[in-house]
Length: 401
Image (cartoon, rainbow, N blue to C red; front, side, top):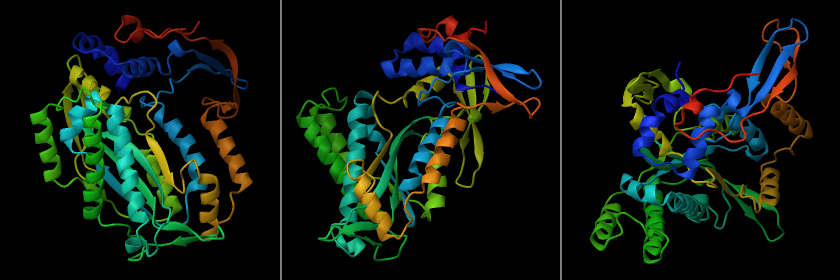
């Protein structure tokens, strides 16, 4: 079965004739092509019982690599075990109109930061409103996860909000009480109202940036183009979608695992690779149906690289009770208010053991005899500098010594 690395090796040179890579794109490209090949180095493992041996090569650990996402996801979820509260959770999606896609390609960092900020401010204001929670000034608990793609790799910039249904309220003595929504336990806010406030906050930030130099190269920054885009953006409702409530902690963790470290496309979706095109599957409906999509190799790469984020951008951000600045105190108060037990030290130890297993730090069972354990008998250093994207060397990983 073909992989994303295979696509880059086969069609990369043709793509680079017409396109220049940004620094993050070049870094992701080099990592994906070299991932789990001898170019990154590795070790030879041998079974003490049956003598079986094989080489195990290092991963690139790039967040855009489909081979590395699963391991990073497992590690992240282990760290979130103590953060999930024993309450129903809601899932909302906040989407930017596609007319802002051109701005995103020139100023991705500004668009992403203000998408997060506008979404977080909107949810925090609604959560602090007694109209919805029955009490004012409450602190919510929610996480936002950025996605920028559709199933066929087009730009579709949106954040998934996973939010506890309720707020933490502190009294004058510093004690905490958990308040559930006044309509029903698993209902938060009407999406039409969220949409209007979300749109207003983002466009207010856009107006301020237009008057400053924050988005100086806005492709629609001219007077007429700016006015037309503003009219279009105000004319239509922005998409805020509320999905089915998630239920309690177990369902929430399971659901988060689908979104947290997902890449634009996984290798399992790439079904065929020819000299001219890439064949991959996309979701056809909400019932799990699939259809096949065909794209020229260069176009597939162009679309994939649209979703390589600028260096330093955090795709997952936490707010309210879960914000890093106050998480230690407020999360403890929320757990006490909900009469949840303290974090079990044994659970922490098992999480560490799990991480050791996932990272393959400890010895492993022999895949051949299923009885012996594998030991490192030789090591192979990786390249000091990975080959340039599109070079012939990148497609020919170095073999073991």
